[in-house]
Image 1: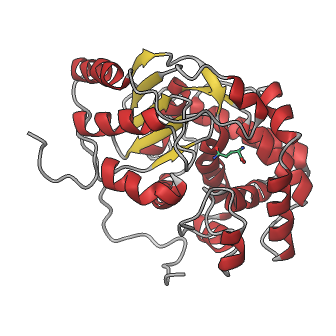
Image 2: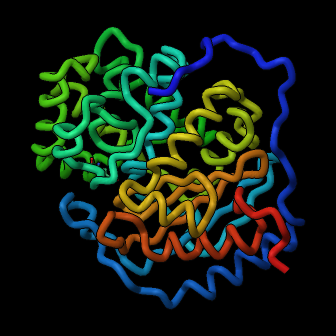
Image 3: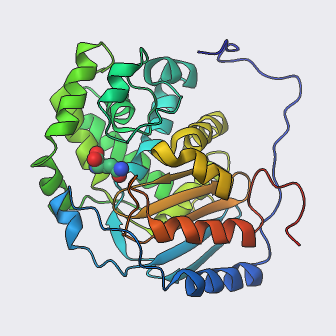
Length: 334
Ligand code: GLN
């Protein structure tokens, strides 16, 4: 772990990197173009290791952009709902940072990439920091175990309340997806027990896996993802409701972990192409955050071999360039 400043260290001067999205009309045009351009892409396969996910319509395609000033633009099935899956991970990590501080969260969960699949057991065995980071299943189940609550029910209520505040509306669970994954998640149970054996799980392993499986089954739309992303882009304030959901420091640290590990073993390729923190999930959603500017939510179920939406990545790349969002770009594209 790198040497760190005290948790409450305040710089003598603080600057925020901001900038504006293009005009609403330009965003609308870019969205329509992105939708049309990426519409014909059908590559990838729908996840089937969770039986209920295999039943989805692979042609579903939604896009939404939410600005940190409260604007919202959509294309396609932007209001259709799907289970959030791994995209719950950054938001639960943010809640953990709020509860125990980001330095303690880093110590207990890690913030470095694994270079291995999201449900890798080998990553736990290979690294002394067993959980590695909160964006892979090991670190995510450990993060869930750190959520405050006297028991698993209270932890679950706190997660629902927290993620609903990020979305700006009450989120509910997809019972069918939950039951389907709960009946088949021996691997995640195994990961939780392995972590427990290494002293890297902070509550009962079976209960933590169950709460984690529930959090993955929360229903969201592309619009919800965009607003959740915009909340992280806006210093932790939900730009639609005005609620301060987490502190600006928590939002900043969460985005750093996303940049490192949001797309698992292909996080480097993602950052190379898109230049923004993002998080994918096996139901085909991706949330992307443009710090200071806004959030992007996309949904297209067919996945690549790492479990990331194929069309979702391409449409995000299109929009990152078209809207001038790439954090590493220092000159205009044209
Ligand atoms: N619930 C899924 C799992 O734990 C989430 C994984 C994902 O979206 N990549 O396997």
